[in-house]
Image (cartoon, rainbow, N blue to C red; front, side, top):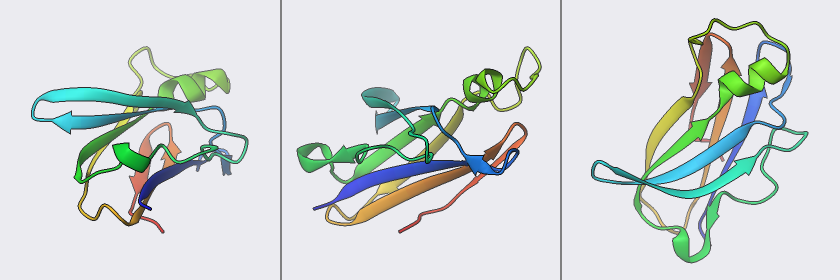
Length: 117
């Protein structure tokens, strides 16, 4: 069965990005449909796939990672307009029966991602 998972690693502190808010949207043209909102656990992962079952289908999706709130909660002093407040990753899912894993490596001023396994 296909599923979408994610996790967050905090490069600035060398630890998992725990208690970070993540939202998943399905993109339909110019419209974003919010599918779920989750918080990462102490390992920077979600306790369950963010998308699976009948909702998991071919399409375009966006993950919104609330990095600014995460760093503020950790006591990091950010500018009023944080450079990376919400990291938005837009990606396509082509194969309904595959596992898509989208990890995020963040710091207050950079991020990277890839399709993991």
